[in-house]
Amino acid sequence: MRGWWREISGLVLPVSCGGCGRTRVQLCEECRAELHGGAPRRVRPVPRPPGLPVVHAAAAYENAVRAALLAHKERGEMGLAGALGKALAGAVRAGTGHAGAGGPLLLVPVPSARRAVAARGHDPTRRIALAAAGELRRGDTPARVVAVLRQRRAVADQAGLGAGQRLANLAGALEVVAGGEQLLAAGRVVLVDDLLTTGASLAEAARAVAACGHAGGVPGSGQAAVVAVSPSAFEINRNCQ
Image (cartoon, rainbow, N blue to C red; front, top):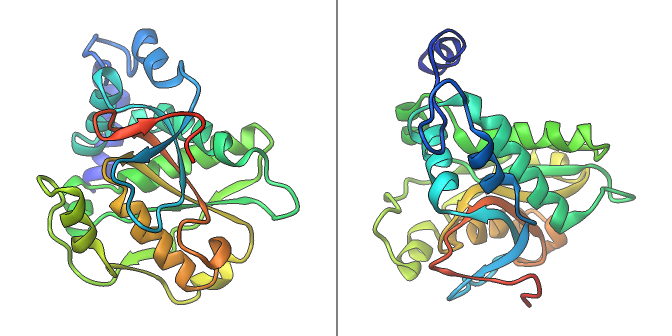
């Protein structure tokens, strides 16, 4: 109900830019340019967690991009999902090109904790992934969201944890739901998330997917895409190895 009310209220009440606060616009042209204006790039954390797949990011997590992601995630500004999904779709394309003989692109979102979804009233990463899949299809790239990952145990809040602590906190925390193996066999898996900081979440997601024999069957051999990456913690280079 909370998510439904936010969506309805966003249609009838005055809005402000999710990036800079300018009134009567969901995302102004200047902030939209920060989100969509740059070419998506391959990124990697320093240090790089074991098993991290190749990751492409649409933008740096700063200024308007940071504000828009937080507005969508924490304040439930659902109307921003389209713009964020467009950015994520660009990062997916940068890493995969167009789906070919391997079948459609299967966007697998990193799951949020149930308590976080309940508190926010929505699952922000899944919502952005759905928008990204729609954007890819409009560009003639077959794509769909396959939400087959779930948390198998509780994890601590990641805020304030270092890279090593995050790895330990998430180790073995995710699994593919029953029947998910068949869904993953239908195309090319791309792990997706809204934000990459240390890479621990995507590395654990890659492990869980690889454990059921997909994404190449080896952790780190698949593809991943994110809306934004923390510039202070990452090497950002189109030629990362």
